[in-house]
Picture 1 (spheres, rainbow, N blue to C red):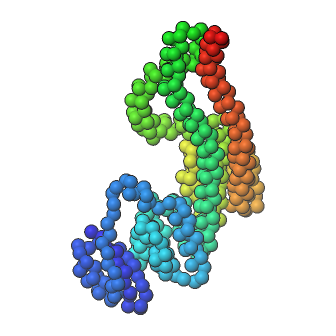
Picture 2 (picture 1 turned 90 degrees about the vertical axis):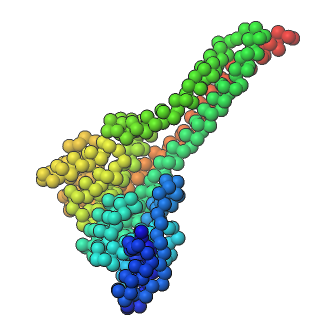
Picture 3 (picture 1 turned 90 degrees about the horizontal axis):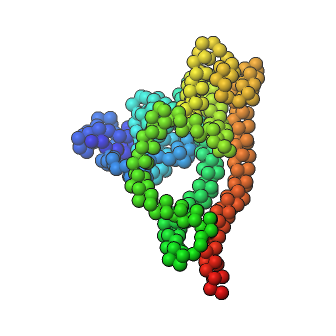
Length: 400
C-alpha cells in the first residue's frame, strides 16, 4: 500500500512524499533513517470508481493555475521543490495534490522536472513535457512556464468559442424537435381520430401531417429499442481507423462549420509550433509533437509527413506546401520566416491571424444563424398549426 508523509528534514525544511510500505511503522523507520521528523502520515487510497474519477480528475483550468503560480514562484527565486511544496499546501483538489506530491517525491529522488511529469501523462500533455524539457536545458523554466500557461489559456478559450458557436443552434433545434415528437406521438393522433370519426374532408397539408404522425407512432418503439445499440455502434465506429478518417473528413467538409473546425486546428498547430521552437525545441521534434495537438486526422498526418520531409533536408515551408492541405498564406509566411531566421515569429503571426479569422466567423455565424433559425422554425410551426386547425375551421363553417 502507499502512504503520503509530511516531515521536517535535518535542515529544518518541510518535505512531502509518497512511499510504498506495509504499515505506518515502516514509514516512520524510513523517515528516522533519513534523519527526518515526521509530522503526519496518511494512508493513500485511490478510488477506481469511474464516477468518482470523473469528478476528481484534473481539469485544464487546474493545470493552467498550477503552471502560472509555479512560474511566479520560480521568478521570485524560490527553488522548484520549495515552489511545489507551497502549491501542494495551497491546492484543495485531492487529485492535483496527489500529482504534486508524486512530482516532489520524484525530484527529491534525483529525477528532473520533465521526467517527473512523464509519470503523469494523463494530466500533462506531450507538448507540456517537451517544453519543460527544453526549458530545463536552456535555463528558462520561469519564462517557458509563463508562456505555457498563456498558450493553454488560449487553447481553452478557443474550445469555448467553438462550443458557444455550436451550443445555441443545437439547443434550439433539439428543443423544437422534442416538441414536434411529442405533438406527433400524443396530440396529432387524437386529432386524426377525431377527424376520421367526423368524416371531415382533409386538405393535403393535414394528410401530410397525419402521415408523419403515423410514422412516428409506428416506428418510435422500434427507434427507442435501437437507440442503445446505435449509440454503442457509433462509438465503436468512431474509434476505428476508417471511422476516424470518415468523421474527420465530414467534419472539415461541413458547410460553414467545416471552416471553423479547420481554422481552430490551424490555430492550435501554429501556436504550438511557435511555442516549441521559441523554447529551443528542434523543428523536427516540434513538428512531431505539434501533430498530436491537431484534432483532425488529416492535419495530424500532414504535420507528421512534413516532419519526415524536413528530416530529409526539405525546408518546412516546402514540406507543408507539398501536403496540399495547408493554406498558401501559411506557406508564404514560413518562407519569410526561413529567410529572416524567425520561423517562430512567423508562426505566431499566423496563429494570431487564424484566431482573428475564427473569431470573425464565429460572430458572423452566431448573428446570422438566429434569424435563419427563427424563419425555419416559424415556417415549420405555422405549417403544423395551419394543417391542424384548417379541418376545425371547415367543421365550424359547415355547422354555421
